[in-house]
Image 1 (cartoon, rainbow, N blue to C red):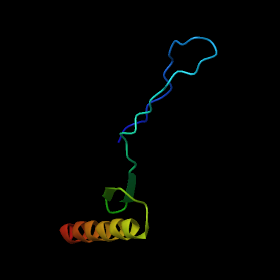
Image 2: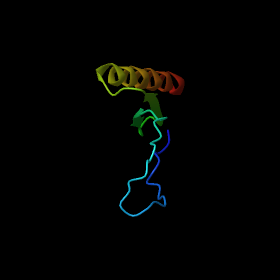
Image 3: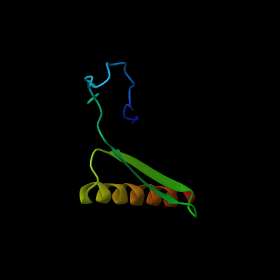
Length: 74
């Protein structure tokens, strides 16, 4: 996770358009998280896509974490 490169200023003759190569070495990711303050439980996942499979994954993971915390407190 990082930021894309910004504008780069470059000296050039007036009326010319200098070549500005763009850095293509980046990829996107999505951060999913759930928090249950009453149970002092939270879960987070970093996924390459934001789709229904990713959402189902975070919901299942948070349910497991919540159940585990509930079992420990009993």
